[in-house]
Image (cartoon, rainbow over all chains, first blue to last red; front, side, top):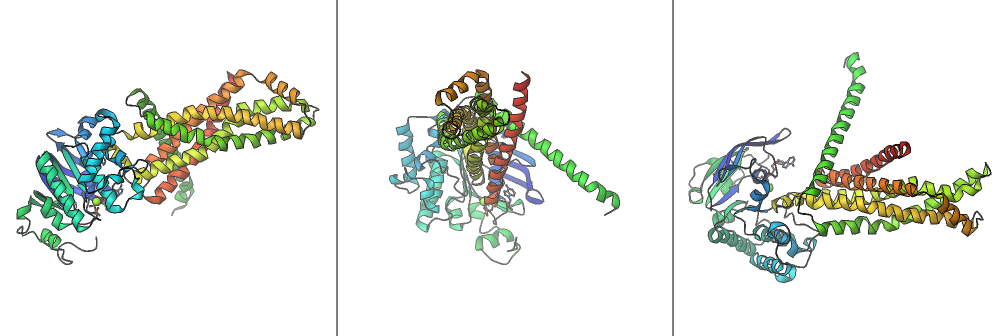
Length: 248
Length: 264
Ligand SMILES: Nc1ncnc2c1ncn2[C@@H]1O[C@H](COP(=O)(O)OP(=O)(O)OP(=O)(O)O)[C@@H](O)[C@H]1O
Ligand SMILES: [Mg+2]
């Protein structure tokens, strides 16, 4: 279980998170929605400790993340970055198998490579991609390699920052199914950021909407349409007018 | 603005600049301490280290060699011109050798490697930083200092002295070629003169300088890369800052080390 209590984060005068409270139950899939620039990526990064909150507490399985042993803590996580964040000095398969080729999870090269190819197949990439370099791939292919890397070591908690952005509708469907599968079959806890409402419905157990630095609404995905919350309604129907200003 | 504040504002600005410099020095010292401390804590990334050794050491050979060759040649001409005023042309071989191994080999070699290596390290790590690759490393349970900084700093500290040694030899050869071809020295006499007056400490002190400069070069590249601001402009500034800082620190460290060796 992941709990955020009153998390604040500002960059200079830009107060991005202004008291975020959110609970993600173990083994569930939480989807975070919200306008561009509202701090969704920052929220994920602060859970991982990549960004230090100015104030507030983040607790994973009862333990304050500030006090946890960093290595053991990070070993439980997988993360897909919004920009992919692939290591461009390494071929694709070594990116995917990064954790498996060094450190405590190290295993023989051929085995690591096989796992990488299997994970690439699960995100819809052919084995011949394995020996190419990230710079030689299209944006959507890079995204999927990032996804394969996030799931390669079968982590307990997985964060996906816009997994389907830049993918064609069929590939989006494949990725949505994959995320659902990971949560259901592997029992992982997932947090996904997406702007794609069909993805929300396909992936989510619960939905949270971030706006103005706080969680405006959170609840089961089934209650999303009948929430009566004007912010959420405007967002899911994509209306240009409403309580959320278009110019932010 | 009142007359007093007008008078004081340059002072305030000077004060702010000094404070900023002190803070930066402190941050760099902490960064250096952290880097060295990772040496004692496994894992050690051997592959990254060997890669850095190849990039920093082997690929810098041409530029260091050429710099040394031309410097040695020019040095021979200058010392001949100066020595002729005292009828002391015979000192050319030994002064070229001593000047090369004690001072010019390490300093010019260090500056050339700084231009080549500090910039490329800062640009590479800075780009990794702005494209979230450093964050990605962390989430993959790999410490960025251990994986990126330590291998490069260690490789540069070991490789630059070797580069300096090679540069010394090539520089002396440059002086020798000019001495034979332009200054009518006898080949055997030139070589004997070089070897007879060169002491082991001359060479060793230059190599120690090389190691210190190598450490500075890679450290500055990594430090400014890791602290790069966002965007292409951020990486550009980090690269420039790394080369400037490395060059200035090499010259400052050179004076300090020379002072220490001089009094020892
Ligand atoms: N390193 C940083 N320095 C300064 N400001 C930052 C930094 N990172 C993010 N921000 C600011 O924080 C705000 C939130 O950024 P974040 O990336 O979390 O947005 P987001 O909700 O993920 O948006 P999107 O949907 O477009 O990805 C933005 O206004 C951004 O300018
Ligand atoms: Mg984002």
